[in-house]
Amino acid sequence: MPTPTPRYDSTPTWGLRDVPRDSESGRYVGRVERYSANAQMLVVVTALLLALAAVAEAFRYGILVYNRTRLVSPITLATSDALVYFAQVGALVVGLFALVCTSCWLIRQRRVAFAAVGATDPRSVRWMLLSSMLPLVRIVMPGVYLTELARLRGDTDADVHRELKLVRIWWGVWAASNALVVVQILWNLRDTLQAEADGVLLSAIVAAVAAGSAVLTLAVMRRFEGRTLRGSALSRPTRWVIAPRSTGTGGTAPHDKAAEPSEPEHSEPEPQAVTAS
Image (cartoon, rainbow, N blue to C red; front, top):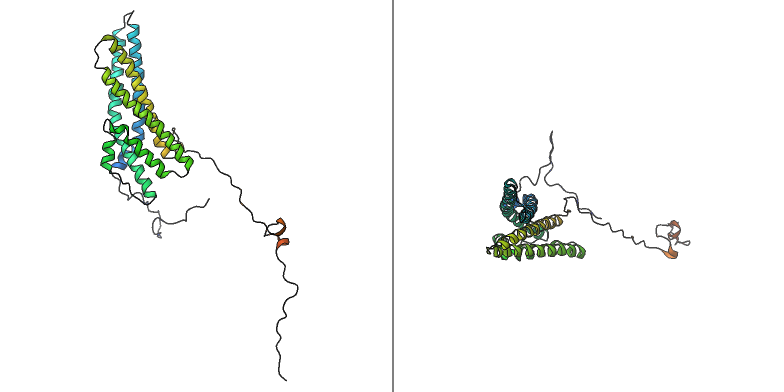
């Protein structure tokens, strides 16, 4: 495979300590770049808190079922309440920061992809941030931005197909997670005891689906960076292609000495000098 032509990032100089200049150190780093650097870490923390919230809600539902026939210790109730509040409030706060940082990550990836083809992103940064955080618009627009990014940066049709498939799976889970939040809010308007008990179970389901959406978000981000979900480099299969070899007369290679054309036997006599007597 051809490699790029070697070049210097800066003019080489002579000295006792000739350290190459870092071209990245002088580059301006804006808010989008700073926030996007923390996006994946915040997504991981959000996924862990949401998983903890799902377990805490399931534990609380188990306590309610157990309490139908037997008494529950006040310490157990206090522990369950503290676990639920910590996980829910933590997931809400960290998830808000993660939403902002992942939006900045998406903007940065689009900038890099458009710059690679010699163009600029036609969409406004403010509009992309706003549309990624508004309650109803955020269900649609992030998927549109990711689809455009996958089609822009795809090297081959197979890569584009795999990335688009992952984006569509994430899009469906993301939409289901937001829809379940709306269902939970409407369900909590009911004030019967059975509705409140069923609301605890619904909260566990909502948290579990949201945790799965966070994990898929991390998978999409690392896929677009050429990495697996665990963070290792994405392995690509090697294509072995048979190099065509041209043959001469009689199926022999042109470099074979036997196939090399011999010099003609009868050559034109060189003219001889004639001297006048």
